[in-house]
Length: 120
Image (cartoon, rainbow, N blue to C red; front, side, top):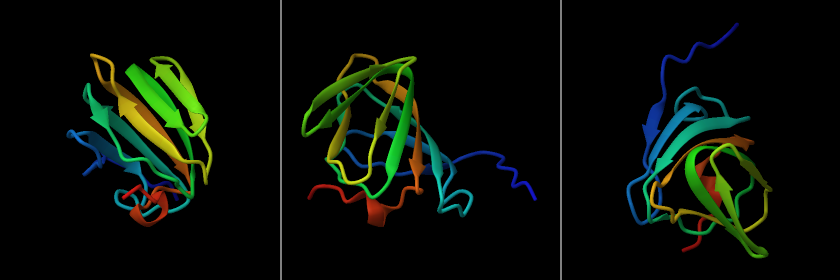
């Protein structure tokens, strides 16, 4: 049977500035562990601690620019572009541009605080 989702749950984000995470599908909002789907809105100057997650993350930028830093370099992902990061890779997300960023993140399996493995 279909599971209708009337709206997201806002989840507290990590980082140096407030960032809005609206989870539509995932453990918190729908009880789903296989995948998570969230809309993110991060302000200019936001930086998240580095992480080595146990999930693949598929990110589509809707507005602004998201910087994805890896051990091998940096990717500036602009509106209309996407990036895939793989489980077990160290990554760090930030929004250094003047407009911040709005993006959709899909994680397989779904995001959990125990499987993101943020840097101390």
